[in-house]
Amino acid sequence: MDDTARELGASRTLWELVERRAALTPDRPVFLAGDRVLTFGELRARGERVAAGLYGMGVRAGTVVAWQLPTRIETALLSFALVRLGAVQSPVIPYYREREVGFALRESGAEFFAVPGVWRGFDYVAMARRVGARGVFAAYDVLPDGDPGVLPPPPRDGTSVRWIYWTSGTTSAPKGVLHTDRSLLAGGGCLAHALRPSSDDVGSIAFPYAHIGGPDYTVMLLLYGFPAVLFEHFALPDALDEYRRHGVSIAGGSTAFYSMFLAEQRKRPGVPIIPTLRLLAGGGAPKPPSVYHAVVRELGCRLAHGYGMTEVPMITMGSPDDSDSDLATTEGRPPEGMSIRIVDGEVRLRGEAVCRGYLDSSQNASAFDSDGYLRTGDLGHLTASGHLVLTGRIKDVIIRKGENISATEVEDLLHRHPGVGDAAVIGLPDSSRGERVCAVVELAPGAGELTLDSVTAFLRGEGLATYKLPEQLEVVSELPRNDTLRKVLKYELRERFGG
Image (cartoon, rainbow, N blue to C red; front, side):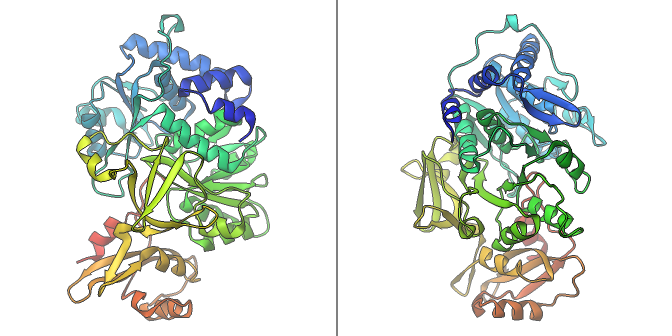
């Protein structure tokens, strides 16, 4: 991290970081969207006007404001206006519907709820009314506006809880995760320190800004003074024109995004789909080594993958300076201030980026150990160089006849099969074995029929032990995924095939 970024990283609050960056480079862009540009100076100035408009509506420091908005310049402005006021904001993923939205509004006690009106054919105002939301207002292309002269001084305490994020829904019940400005600053600093961007880079936000990756990525932009292209709705190949038009040099999102870029590149081998691209970066889901090598070989850029979760927005991150082996097989290294402890194979965390706990405080006792380390539920180990290797989830360990089997190990080998486009391995109840190994796969484009015998023969050839071989194969047109970073919903697969 360069000296300027390190100095800015010492900001106590997110708004202080905005002020300091705006003073340094007021005319440089921070967000690009089609023909629209928002500069760092405008982020500060317009953010204050929106804050004044919200203040006129009755929003004060500590007021809980939920918002469910797509990835737009207005969304970022509203979020930072709430930061300026010191309100408590609860971002909600735009794809959530009555069940998740009603839960988030009730649990958070939101007094106001910002929605896009009708977006992509869905009426968010009507849904808000159905779930009994309070203080509903539209914030798609017109935001509250007022005279900043009415505003009280911005809050300078960055350690108070001012963010309620919701776990992504890969389990049946979401949890409200409590964050502070400082925890989000620490997470974004980890990302920035690892990726080593410059002011000449152009990034991209192709995932929902309401995801915790939204402020994570924006902190990186503020620290290094470069812009990102916003994608209100991401789909390939349609989005490629925007990547090329703005000269995006850093792209990504998660493993599913890498695979989508690869699929587009394979339509025209040897002709770069984004000529300016130098780095793919992301996290949120496992990255098979085969995907790393395919990206480097076919897209001609580096791939730096990281490890984060709603509770800790950035834990470790690969760096473009890492070796190919580390980038392919690890999740990178933690930043200064992130303590990783491995207890009985489980990754546990303590540091400034770790959340303050859960909105439902009864969930805290089981989430943290007696030394204050967050229990992630992920299994892994640290290498001699300090890189983290994840080997699976505690609940993804399949116990067959008393033997532990890592679902991730089997998945990584399945990704090498030329007929497999994507794969998820799950354990299913079995009366004689305790659990049986079930592989659920998507076919690769143009692949022929897959059978259990052919798959197990391939895995034997790859050296997989006999007791780890799948005993059930299911071929699906598409694996079920969530709508944020496209994580596979394994609980749905267990429900579907566990009968």
